[in-house]
Length: 64
Image (cartoon, rainbow, N blue to C red):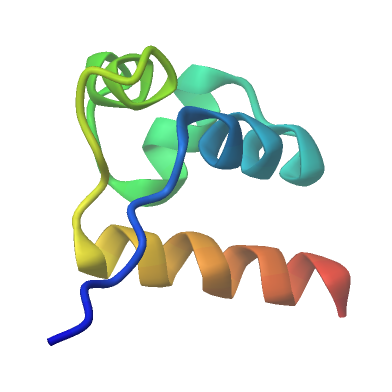
C-alpha cells in the first residue's frame, strides 16, 4: 500500500510565500493556531489531510 507523501517544511513555507501570507494570517486562513503553523515550518509536526487539501485549493485559486 502506497502512503501519501508528507509535505516538507519547505512546502509549507513556499505555500505561505506564494500566497503572500505571514504565519498568523496563514493560520487564520486555515483555521489553525499560529503555533501549529510554526511547528509545521520547523518540521516538528505535519498538517492533516484536510488541511493539506485546503492549502492545495488555496494555491490553485491563487494561481487562477
